[in-house]
Each structure stands twice: as structure tokens, then as C-alpha cells.
Image (tube, rainbow, N blue to C red; front, side, top):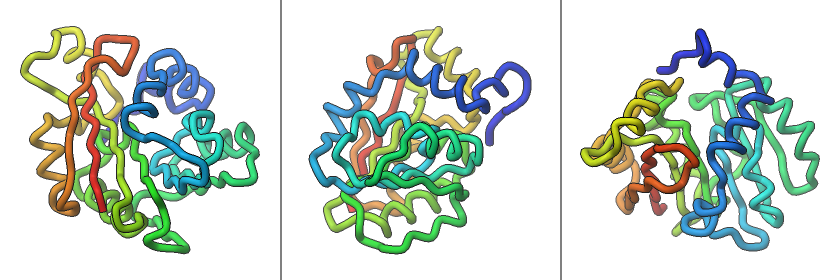
Length: 202
């Protein structure tokens, strides 16, 4: 469910991906308003990329997983930390050693790159991994009625081709989680863009 040819192929290169994330998507507001880290927090990062969010989680026990071998190798080199580990694994093949173990699961910019079937697998994995009361935070581009033409155009050019509106994400997540909330934000990126912050509670 993604396009990786042409100019979009540049983001498959770990350095280019990390640079793009740093320039376009500072994580400060996301961390402050949604993730709310604390010392010892156990974090599962599904689709971790090169692990750039780790700098915002200095005291977390962290496991990052991604289907890109190149991203994972880069993450291991850049984040050699005792309480952080990385696994190269696809959505359907995630096998965690412990269930009901994590305080929070992250899936930042993942769902719109995968099919609905794979997205349901992701939600199930997160539900199984989270402690009772634990939270999944998914962050996704989103179509809304009042967004600017430029934001809509930029989103339409994303590598991921399974972008939904708020109702679409709600229908998907609610098949697995009974408790969830979706915030729509236009202020988290440095470019005109609309994001859905999907918070699901185990």
C-alpha cells in the first residue's frame, strides 16, 4: 500500500528518512501532549524507522521494530543504549517474548503504509503487548473537510497510499479496542499537514 519508486524512493535511504523527519516533524508537541514519558516507562515502537524518537525518551525501556532492514541497522548503530533494542520484523511476524508488558505502544506514520488487514494485525499486537490501561498512540495523515488545499495535496503525494479520514481510522481501530479517542491536529508539522492522533486504551 505504498509507492517506493521515483522521488519517493529517496526516503527508503535511512539518512534521508532521518533528515526529513528531523526537519519536517519535530516531536516536542507529540511527546508533551500524548506520549507523556516518565522514567522506566516500557515503550514498544512499531515501525520505529531509525529510532529517532529515542532522544525524547531518555529513561525508557524501549523496543523498536521495523520491516526495513536498513532502518534497523542504522538504528542499532546510532542508538547504542543499554535499555534500547531493535528488531527487524514485519507486521505479521511480530512475536514478543512477553505480553501485557508495555506501558505504551507507538505506531507513528505506519497505518497509511499498510493494508487494513495488516493494520488490524498491528492493533492486535499492540493490544496483546500493553498492560491493562496501557496506551497505543498511532499518528497518521488524515483527510478532513476543512483542511487546506496544500495540506491535502501534500498528503496525497505520500509514499503511503492508505490515508483515511477520521471515521475511517475509527472504524479500523474500534474493531480491536473498545476505548479510543482521535484528535485532529494541523500544528504538529512544519509544513501544511493534517494528522490524526489515535489513542487506544487496553
